[in-house]
Figure 1 (cartoon, rainbow, N blue to C red):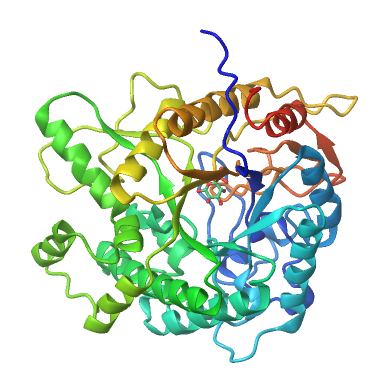
Figure 2: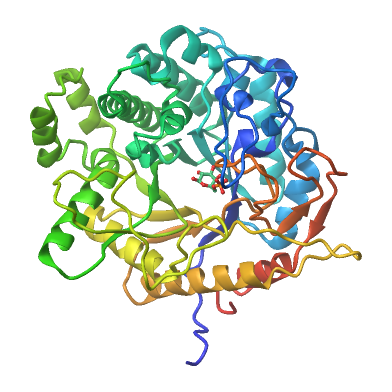
Length: 477
Ligand code: BGP
């Protein structure tokens, strides 16, 4: 097939994405408090990370140093500028601004750090795109309040959001409230509950109910933040951030189709609430059926309506497949089956570029809102050659195939896509495993899984490839 030489719309936001706890390091610098991410140990694809109660001397915590972006960001932003980035997605570490999370006054040193970081981006005309809560909440909120199981967290988060909007609204136009808010659907993995919501389920507690309650509080907090942000500055664009893994039926058997539909509803009701401002009826019926008496007030429901999002930001790495096995309700821990048509990465993530075009169309049909692909990429082991090169043609192929599908969704299907920020544009600590060796970057960072290495940065082959993609606005992939 002839190469598709069409360009993306002008003003398309090409860039890259990271999260504070996965690259900043400096975990106690500038008055920062501990966050739950500071208690994640190192794992690997066969051994999940654990979360210790306090910092243990004999454990390694990869996020403490990460890639030391906290001290080296000018060098890194310069490399992003060299690639031609139009935007840079990062998050604000909540515990840099509010070390405990429940203070009235913010920590000026933390605020100043992000002022300087955003100024450095703007120096090169790189627009910051900011996530407020990316998998880390101040540890004190976990220990004192039990994380998002407590309604008070709404107040603390909204205060944090308000302080950030007021301080940075002249520098940051694009915001997202909670990273991958729907990744809690896998409620049987207690680690996820802990990560997203800072909840440690107690013996005998119903994880599923806890998840729905925490998610409700988060959605109310998000809606209140969106409303406040718009009141302060109507130019702010505040979006949701959804982990999009389309769920396909294994066969065309009507039962499989219906079950896949319910699975999609179960994974994506979060964006329904963000975008529509109300709960889907099937879910309210489900709460009844399960006898979940959730704390959802009339005032909450009014607030959800008043704080709907401006766009849907989402991550896309893989698709899922399900098969109906006789029960009605989708349970992510048990109902996924391998897709015989799709190959998986070394970490078992099913690589499916076509699924990205499907997802873009699916979101468009459902919400009629602008979309933003704020994460996508291939985690792979890279080899640094003696002359400091990385020949990562596998990564280039992955990105080529995904960008091509994105191009078709935009130019053929008419999807309104704001931009594309591939994940981990510079190598960083994996959220899932804590490894450095699961690399996503265009820029190689000399550091191993245990924190050894010079931390020097090197341009991979994909660096030059992506630079050209941006320069030609996607005409040359
Ligand atoms: C997303 C998270 C990111 C990031 C990415 C890759 O779910 O938003 O924080 O880490 O996945 O995952 P991993 O780091 O586990 O490879």
